[in-house]
Amino acid sequence: QVQVAESGGGLVQAGGSLKLSCAASGNILSIKSMGWYRQAPGKQREMVAVITTGSSADYADSVKGRFTISRDNAKNAACLQMNSLKPEDTAVYYCNVRAGLMWVNYWGKGTLVNVSS
Image (cartoon, rainbow, N blue to C red; front, side, top):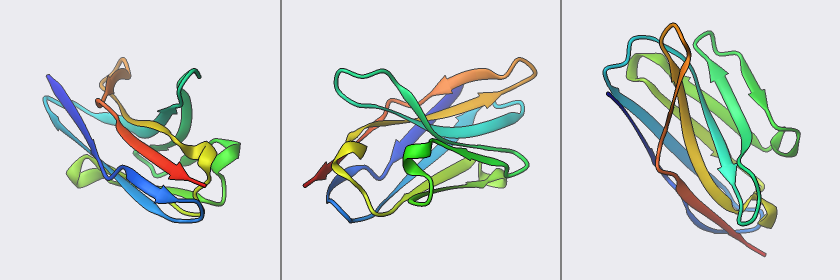
């Protein structure tokens, strides 16, 4: 079984910064990618940033230049540095881990990021 845990959410003013952390543990055969998704009230979950084992990163257009994803393969961990936060970044942020030959999805429970104007 695989456990995924996020931390680092909170309340911040517009223009501020937050750093989210994610750690995966348990019976992890081989992590293919780690990423962050978010879901705002009344909206669908969307990809924010994803990074592969080879450190190739992909970002949503709305966060390019403001967010940076990084990964520590040895610790099965990833971080999302969020700068210049906007009220529209307010959402529950979920860590996603894809692992194994079938790229199985594992999700954390989410952490709330609330950006006030």
